[in-house]
Amino acid sequence: MSMYEIEGLMENTVTLIDKSEATSPQKRNLIWNAYELQGAFDCSFTHFRVMPLLQRNEFVQTYEREAFPMYQDFSAFFDGLEEESFTWICENPAAAWSGENGAIAYWDKDSKKVFVDFGSPYYSLHPEEKPQKIAPLDFGWQMIQTAHLQNNQASIYDWTAFMIFYLIALFPTEQSTEVLKETYFTGIKSIFKNYDYTNYEPLHDGLDLHNKEEEEWLTDQQKELLVFLLG
Image (tube, rainbow, N blue to C red; front, side, top):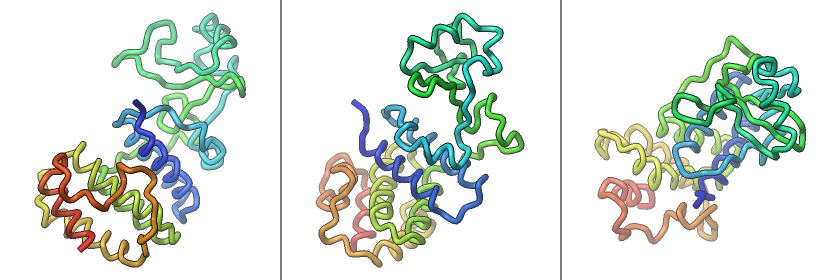
């Protein structure tokens, strides 16, 4: 089952990045990291929910089907896309997707265009730029600071919960709880306490920071961070 809470969080994060004061290259890299993070979870493909923002920030590039660089070598495949609503295009379109034959583009029937994302070998809008991976907890902390600059209390709450409940679980760290507090959560707490969350409804139950202290699935480190944040 798709993790709707993460899809919603990343959709909101693209909007957050779009509204930020980051430079255009920084925005493309941040969006790339958001979708890389989403891809680590069981999520659907959600680009089209925010496609105008992705195009405005030149994260996405579109081609006419016949103009796509692979068309001449795989014309039968590309001509057949006319009957498909959405299709991933792999490095070798004639073969099935695999770890060695990953997706490098996608087809959308409504627009009749081939789309490529920043980081694809067929992305040519800014060839001098390459994606730079940001560590998940560093990315979360950056998004919380960005949200604070925009007075976006929803994103502050949801990203804080996501860091504690999801990122620390999926990307276990060897850092001690005290180091995590010093590096991330002291700063997060100082931002978090500026907002009133008395009647706040989280994006999803999985991102509800309250009434979780006794949950058996939480590690001792997660519980300690949660108590520290809310204390």
